[in-house]
Amino acid sequence: MRSSGWPVTAKWLVCLAILLVFSGCTQMQTFLKSDSNSAKAKPAKSKVKKESYYVHKVRWEGETLSLIAKWYTGSQKNWKVLAKDNPWLEPNEISTGHKIFIPRNLLKTKKPMPRDFVVATKPKHKVQKIKAKQADEAGEDLSESKADALEFVVP
Image (cartoon, rainbow, N blue to C red; front, top):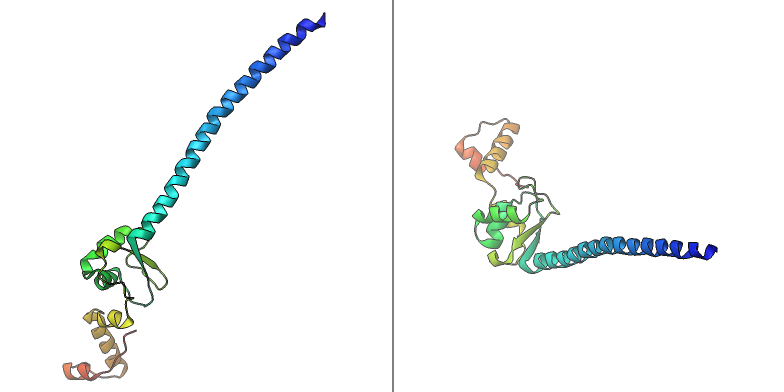
């Protein structure tokens, strides 16, 4: 006479199993959707970086975005484009080892930027400060002729 209790228990177990399956399916579907979206986004993003950018590695002290832009694109004005395409980079704090992504559509050359280009394009006011400092250390007055005669090294 206890046999009537078994079908009721079985019905509850079946209902519970169905509920678990349906609740698990909705969570699994959400999980799969988020995984497939992130998997698609990552390769596409890395492909875009590799294909549409040339990578410049900063090798010399004194390199600036405007110098890099001038060398690779032919125009200093493109420093703003470089700043936009390298948002993690602080434009005034570039140091050796940094990688700068340069849009390929702006490239005029792929030759690495030589040290001579960095030194030759240093602002003149820095050169004058160096001359003034050397003259001061030598205990001399800085006249035009003496300033021109002084030798100096720009790092």
